[in-house]
Length: 302
Ligand code: COD
Image (cartoon, protein in one colour):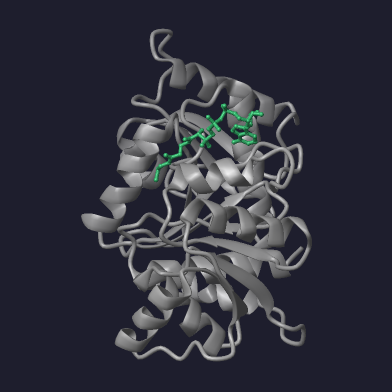
């Protein structure tokens, strides 16, 4: 059972050359710090795309050694993002990482029909949390890309996340589909979707996982809470993955875990040609490092 984000190191390849990670735009302190650390630990080989003068200035202030890193000098963040995405598209690098650019700018480039990173699958955001008060790592999806997913999109989001767990040695992750209540309420769309997803899983239409829902957050993560409410569920209290009703709920949970619960988090976009390290601007250097680790671990496991 995975209990620490550091446990992800066991999935890094021992012999292969480190994967090439493109950071764009590179003039971002926390991202640059995380990339340099990951390079020093041999996890990735960095390619920096961005404003060279600003990045070198930042490295000097932060006492980071970026000599010898491949660099593409581009001061305009939108053009830099396009160049970085093209590197992955053309097979010249393995992982993309968001630096100092808005999430939607990066995602629009990733979705570009000519040079983007589409595979025909839905792309979605996956976050993996280490929370002191929970006994194992717990995934949360989608908190940053799909705004108000339909049932079909929820199926794709769920499958993307399950694939990550399968790669990390969890053959049948337990998935809680969240609602505000644990009973189907015809006025609450999230509970209807949750019930349908559970039934589709029971009937083998969604595989390689065990889905239950609707579950409210408390009974998803606490067996005791589920017992109090007399909920019989193999998922309750043992959840590996929380499937969110929409981006607002997901984003608030993400930030509550980080800021109130001081949880550690790693996150990325999945379903694209390559993993995309996409953290929030307010995330720490440690979160960015752990996200690189998650991306490298899941790429290595393919
Ligand atoms: N996966 C695959 N293809 C997609 C996806 C997806 N998740 N989303 C859109 N597409 C395709 C569409 O099929 C279409 O072909 C094209 O991309 C454009 O679709 P639009 O017009 O719906 O999408 P955009 O470009 O207006 O917006 C896509 C974003 C991902 C940018 C948008 O959904 C978005 O802003 N999401 C939230 C990002 C955000 O602000 N997160 C902040 C939280 S930290």
